[in-house]
Image (cartoon, rainbow, N blue to C red; front, side, top):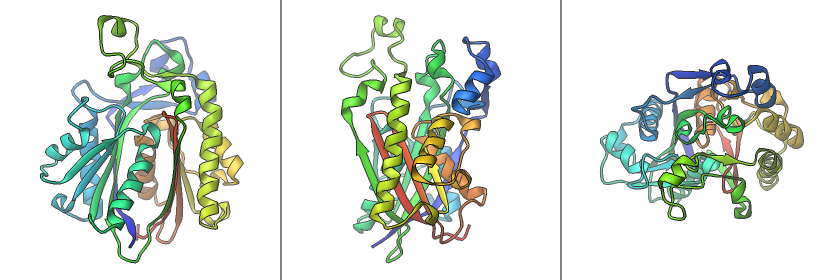
Length: 329
């Protein structure tokens, strides 16, 4: 039994928020942002858009790219930390907007690691033969949980969605292996304090900006570099491969210095690392999904290539996978 990716898609909102725009909002500068993060601009949802809207557009492109009809999809997995509402799931909302019915749908909350977690779930479901084609979506409206008075976080985040169709592939292994991990003891380094059952919405939580993302940046930076590097090394060791064997590394786009640090610690040349952070910033779960689709469309991935994806996010969570690309792109 095997599973492979047969189609990818992505969607970015039209509105662009540049570093020059942020200079007018908080005490920062283009030079400061670019030097420390590598980000030049990011996309922002319009007021009438939600994560499900982004996810639907990415899904439509993935379905078209796979050359299938939407009614062939038997499950939707949506990775998001900016769901349309607490319930129903954003996956169910996307299902309705795609005109589908009577299929399995659920959300996963693994923050920036969500897309790789979702791919591994899809691999498991298709490998056991119960489902043949699964739509994995990562959709985020991070601007909705961004405090634009906090210069340490507002320069980082953007909105977008990525999607992939995972299909049962018989004896052909596309998604070869995945490594997933987490450490809940570091949960207070990256979180949104209010809006859940622990601290429900109130006048006080709103006025105190507790519905926005909070982050201990320097601590997260150090853990991210080590966790992502170890996740790559683990997947290499388990599959008896080395850095020179992979054709492309697609890392989470959180910070260019994190990406460079991971490449250095794993021995992967930056020439083999896909980077688009300068255009979109950190889109949480959507970052890796969008990067995968852009890498495919840019001709950076070819049939037979070994591709490694890696990510790190709130939880704290981390994930990596190894894919042998089976499509003629």
